[in-house]
Length: 347
Image 1 (cartoon, helix red, strand yellow):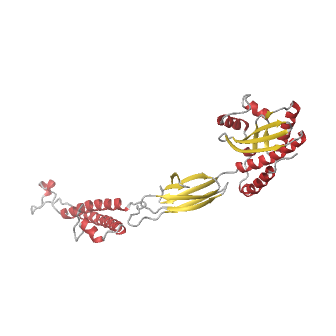
Image 2 (cartoon, rainbow, N blue to C red):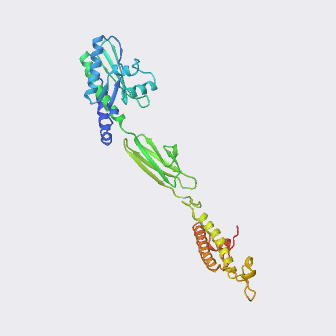
Image 3 (cartoon, rainbow, N blue to C red):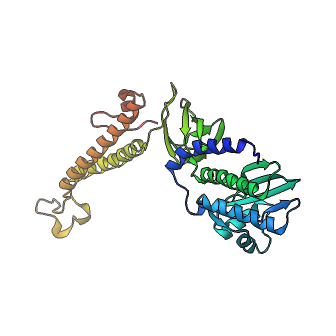
């Protein structure tokens, strides 16, 4: 037997590259399950050889620890079709057999020269995930069986790599809503979560009024990466105030305080003033004065004090807000027209 040396090198490469990733996340039981599609034979094969090669393939895959669904079960699950020619059919077979992967095998022979092709179909989307091809020149059945066993080991290593969880990056920005680009492609607005191929990527955060930021990220298969961009405002631009509740509350307090202050002063002014609606008959004393008078001093004092406090609090909130935005307090006071015993507004 003279198999090409590429199979040995490929197996060694896959073993070296897959081992660290496998330590991070082991495939689930479903992802360690593969359905064998009916083997495609091309050339002069008798029934005994077909049965023997199929048995070698199933046994070799089982020996690697892979859970194998035999071709007959796959055929029954497909309603008698067995093999597929489109992605939807592959997805249906994967769901029906509870196998993440499907293995399509093709064996060709011409004058004792054999070629074995193994395709791995990913049942999640029905796509061709990997292919392995090897040949054997002037071989007998026993040598072809050994070739099948070697290719089964390579196939299992590829399935283990494919079954690992993808690399995932979660990106947030401060402030939120920045446009995120990865490797030059826009993927959405932060916060977001995105799957990436393992390796090095360039992530960029972009938002109007802020300096664009770029960062290199290294993703590993099966590992979730968290990235936060803290954007810096451009010079001369104003950062939107987070939860800017002070101006609305300040103006509300000024409005309520001003109205209350006017009412409190009115109550104080009419205290002890005769109640004209009841100034007749027995309600008039010997000196001709009305006995019934307004008693509003306590209410006037309480309302005036409370309203003055509300007014002061509202004015303070507005002045503090303007100071943070770069306005001087004198300009704010002039706008409010604050002064000894006065309240006004200028817009």
